[in-house]
Image (cartoon, rainbow, N blue to C red; front, side, top):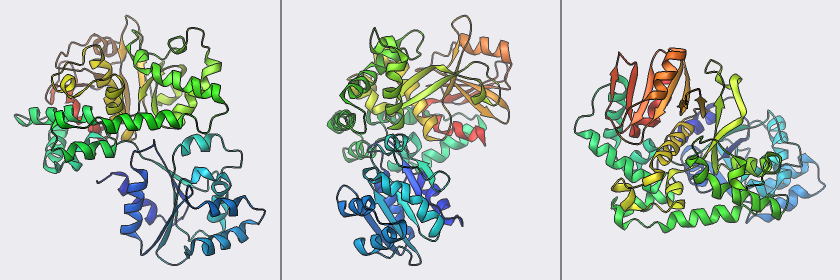
Length: 438
């Protein structure tokens, strides 16, 4: 399956200032697959090691040898000269050896001709809790997220549809009869989500919703729960991590929508749950959307760190957790979850395309779901789950801040109303919001 991060990997390869690359992302989002494809396609000489299996490498880097000795012994141990021209070494599951993570500084400073890519499960958690020094400034990082809707369409062979959606987005042009086709594909994405194995299962059954095997998502959720035992301080922290994750659907149903520790546990206090919450964020199992007190540039300078919303990292997983099946999604019968699932979907699309998750809350119960920083100023984004586009919050926001234009994501077709300054964008085109930041 084609992934857009491939272009970023090519840029890294073409960079003259060689630095080891660390690729981060939630478990099973496709890190190993895409790195393996990149290394095979773009380099003449390629070696992959997995530290779950190649434990001798861990023993080497835990030894008392100096950095130079370890470096030379590594080439002998894995029988690969990664200094040879057009060569690359992929170290998977590098979180198993923090000594090797720390040694990436030596690679960069003393062997800048060497190409190394690293990845691993819960690597973000491990990096946040390293006991050894992290090679600050000596490595590059890339983040991989579950497949966004554009990548989902690529996997379905819908390249012509992608091009047409982009054309209509740029020109505020109606999709016509194609709009309904795109909406049906959007619904199928809500079912499968963006996990590559889940998307693959949907394709294998010819996108027949009712024959789609939901067990793949159940397995991923179980793997996530098992991961909650790893890289934690004690069993009490594991329990708190599980409690937070289990509370997310209830958190998003709150009238305020903001994350409240009391929903996790009636006696919970932020100081007791901040570390477990950070664990979930570093694992990329959740995505945090912070409240902005004043919607002015730079937005990050006006963030209220104590007020935020928390989303699941993948909308397919969210639907599985709340037990929404093909029938409830296809027949638009998601009941109380419909609005927050749609909002979660948009959050995933924005995050996957490099947009900071930020929102605004004002007086008269007004709330703007997301904010976008552009050359035209701060642009408000409102999310609607269907074609009901009544918008009190956008009206309040416009009266207060008079943005150049506003965006409404819904099931309605593309369009622009110069009187209301609202650009209508179908939910299936949420991945294109990134174009407005260029």
